[in-house]
Length: 170
Image (cartoon, rainbow, N blue to C red; front, side):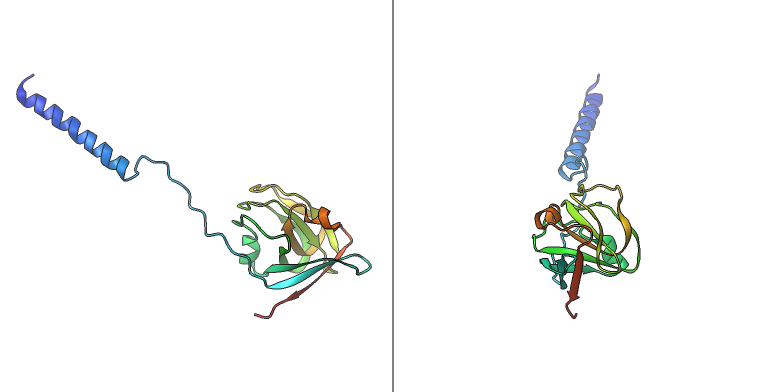
């Protein structure tokens, strides 16, 4: 090989090496990471009390309210924790069979389905975080309460019990 050919080959190799180093430096070869949304913080919007069928108080919690399509779709997604005395109350315009999923939900929940008469219809306990499988009610529900998994067992909450709630003025 003559001197000119060697210089061209060396120059080409150096150019490729510089391009590779620059691309690596600017992250072009790195795996892209998904950016999760900002974790929503709990906002107390009311209080909810669980009652026995004979109206004895079981437990009272602070609630956040999901009363629009957007808020109901968001639910507790992206939350990494929730205090034992907190939950989310979903308000629906009419009683119907409900089904929830755990997409983008980090914490396991007890999902409590409540009829228009405010009696608990059914409870889905210890749901699986991030699951996209539907978790259906066993009857018509107009309200749904989500609390930390194990809450219903700890406080003895069961179908037939009732809820009462009051919302803070906004």
